[in-house]
Length: 467
Image (cartoon, rainbow, N blue to C red; front, side, top):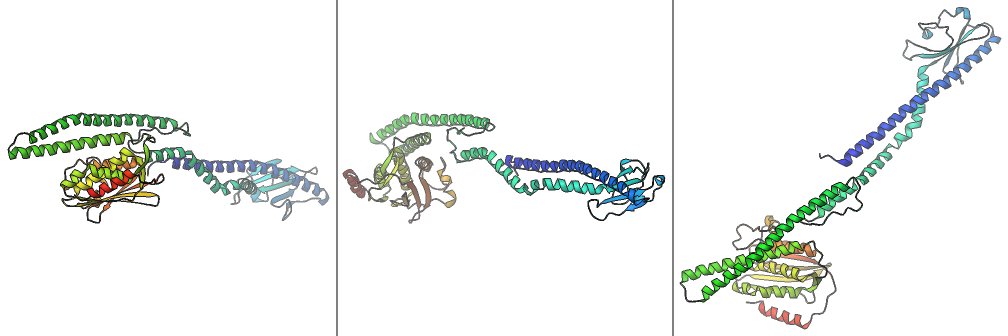
């Protein structure tokens, strides 16, 4: 079990409350014992004076006076002549010293009841009056008084412990709030923790965490700049190589073997160019994930974005003889930044076409329900095993044995964009046995009527669906 500040505080405070209660009980017992001694000593003195006064009218008296009830109950009274003071007749009152000593004396006892407290006085006629009381009686009275004073503390102990738990819970609430804030953050979120309402004891920890976040954010930003700069610098050489290869292929006749090699070289350069473009796209998307882009966010016609993506990838679909069908209602809009939505749809469609077999199909549909707009893209490829569907969103990860050239960045870009615009990406099985990707956009804004340009696009799109 891991150490817990709350548990430690709760244990310590509970032990402190119980210890203070026990200490108060002991102190009350001590004070009550002193009061009981004063009270009973005074009572013994008054009782002895009353008995001494009574002996004037009784004449000579020798022996114990039984007291069974009344205010003197619990006391033992003995009267004897002064001349017999040196003779002890009751073993329970015997002492090793002078039994005729006047005043208060603590007398030991050999029985289980314990010692006695005795008061002896001499009357004017020379008669000795002894009043004795068990010390245990005084202890019982003191304990009863202490218990009566402190029992409310223990009776209210559950309420006190509940209050202690509440205080501890409230005391560690800022630490828990900071923990929840850190757990909910994206790994690359560079924003600092809010120090508002942070106790002074926790403020140094928050300050150090913010410094650490700033340092990590600087490292991430430096890495992104390096990737973006490297990708940007590679674009021009790759474009130049591609043009040179195309010029060689389009020039004077060359041998078939050399032509095949140049064709493979051109495909390799094209693939490298695609990876560079995706790296730039991923770098821009991740760099802008936590920035405010409200000025660029607006309601966008989903059909327009899909049509532009299909148009851009029409050559790839035509080359593989893939039929792309689209079923998107008019005036269906999503709230997003135009570049983000275009990149998301383009990467999903590019994956669907690449992983579909020659002569396959790609189906694009959209619908709106429960305040969510769902875009679904299904292909007829091999699909993705259930155990791999979470890992394919990692950068540069590709499913083993796919047999299709790629960079492993497409779905990473899609998830990054989806998180940025508040959408959710889910993978499933398509009706044709391939992969189904569903993107759920939160509904925002009111539908707008479709303009004439949009109608023309929809018509042209229907023509481009069948290669």
